[in-house]
Each structure stands twice: as C-alpha cells, then as structure tokens.
Image 1: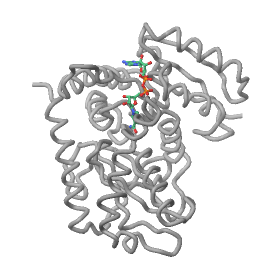
Image 2: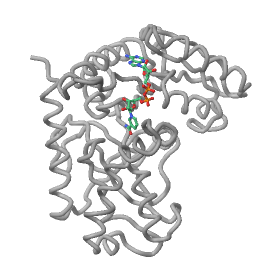
Image 3: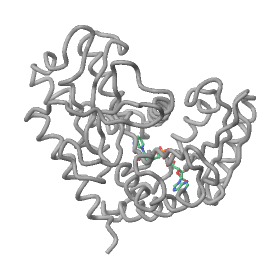
Image 4: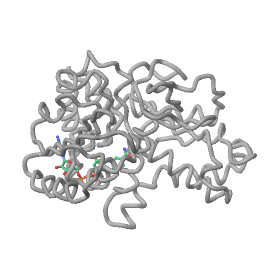
Length: 325
Ligand code: NAI
C-alpha cells in the first residue's frame, strides 16, 4: 500500500469545498490506489461547518481516507502538504469595487503563498479556484520563491469542459470524440475558448468555426457567460461542476492527459505565444511525467490573436492593481 499524501483544501466549508472532498476521499482525484489525508482549512467563523463536513467524511468510511483535520491555521494546514486546493476567497460584497476585491484577495493569497513556501512538501502542487483565480495564483507564486513557479496553477478546466459540452451539443458528437479544445487567457468573461485546433470525430474544429455567426454570437459568449447563467438559474454559483473541474485538473496533472489530446490550465507564462512572462494565463497543456507542458507551435490566426490579446490585457491590468508599491 502506498503512503498517504496530504491534500489541503481551503474554503472547505463552502459550496465547492463540500462538493470536492467526498470525491477526493473516494479516489476520483489521485486514483483508486492512493490513500489521502485531508486537511480542511477554514476561517474561524466557518470552522463548525467544516467540522460537520469532517463528520460526514468519517461517515463515508472511505477506504482511501486515512485522516481528516479541520484547521484555521494555514501553517498547520499546509505543513507537509503535496496538494493545495485554494478554493476559499473573499467574495465580492455590495459596494465593493473591483480594486478592493483584488486587494483583499491579494492579501489572502500572498499569506498562503508564503506559508506554502515555508512548510509544504517539496512536491507541492497548487490549484487556485478562488476568484480572481489567475491573479490570486500569480500573487501566491510571487510569495513562494522556493517553489517552482509552474507548480502554481489556476482553474480554467471548468471553462474548458463547458466548451467541450457546447461543442458536443452543437455537433451531436459525444464528448469523448472531442479533443484539442483550448481556453486561453483569464478565467473571466474575456476568456477565449478556441476550437480552431479541435477535433470532433473526423471533423476539424476550423471547419465548425467556419460558421462565424454561431462562433461569435453563440459559442464564445455561451461558454464565457456560463457562470452567470448558472447563477441566474440556480440562485448560486456553480459548485459541483467547479469541483468536478478541480478534480479533473489535478487528476490529469498527476495521472496524465489523454493521448492525442490536451487540456487547459492557467499557469505562469514562460513568455510563449507573445504572452508576457509571469502572467498566469490559460494555455493548451499536456501533462508529462507529472508536470505541465505548454503545447507550443500552434498557428494562431488573427481572429484568435485579437481575443487572446484582449484577455491578456485584462490580466495585465489585474496584475497592475495588485502590485505592491
Ligand atoms: P463559498 O462562499 O460557498 O465558500 C467559500 C469558503 O471559503 C467559505 O466557507 C469561506 O469561509 C472560506 N474562506 C474565505 N477566505 C478564506 C481563507 N482566507 N482561508 C480559508 N477559507 C476561506 O464559495 P464557493 O461557491 O465555494 O466558491 C469559492 C470560490 O471559487 C469563489 O471565489 C468563486 O468565485 C470561485 N469559483 C471559481 C471558479 C473557477 O472556475 N475558477 C468557478 C466557480 C467559483
């Protein structure tokens, strides 16, 4: 039997946290032969909720779950952690400006980044889900100088999965026949779901993209505004689908992407595709030996370039807003 690995989940009493931890305990994230110790990190006022979740985890009698700890101290929560799922964040409240939201979250993710730097395991891998996810990940990475920058990622897999689902609906193909979809940029309304390199069965994505009216007026906005549509329909933001995407992201990071396919992950740009170094931008990536590798050399047409540039400009303005003087 393998040694258990420590998985730290922040915001564990929240909606996405609740929808994640049972599937992690069941082996959906790291495989059905990998024992897991869970650390649930919460704010002091939400500790009772996290304790309740821990009680339910006990009641699952999960064979792979070796321990559950509920903590409000990040230093204890990340001590020896191999995975950090950074879901907890400060939500935007009434009267709060975008700059205030960025600043409040920058404080949280700076603190967590520096704790991760100090106490996490050498193989720590981080996924930031809490919004603004890309910039929060950039802030955390900047405060963890001893951790390789590409271990800090942000979630755009939900957008990626949404794009596949919309493409399947449009074409009648099954999701398993769809590959090589890319989400570029920020996890926000400026994101660009790119199907020009996709394959749908034996059809090429650029063939499907030839219907520009559908692409511009339907596909791209439906994917980019799906989060808002979910809020309108259910009265609260996507939770189970976000948890599912978080699990997919870590699963593929550790266990590999499908052959002949790739996925979308936001990670610090190494300066490829004209995207400034260090910006946490969503790219097409493959997982090779447990690390992300950006798929390079894709031909970016003018249509795609303009949309990628617009999302990158937004990422730059977010970075400016959180840069400490
Ligand atoms: P929620 O409000 O239900 O739960 C958030 C939890 O985080 C709360 O229990 C809160 O006490 C906790 N928390 C806040 N600050 C914390 C800190 N510093 N340390 C530890 N815990 C902390 O929110 P929900 O629905 O679970 O969403 C979580 C985040 O994920 C939000 O920022 C949301 O915008 C974002 N999100 C991101 C998506 C993506 O695709 N990247 C998709 C959907 C949501």
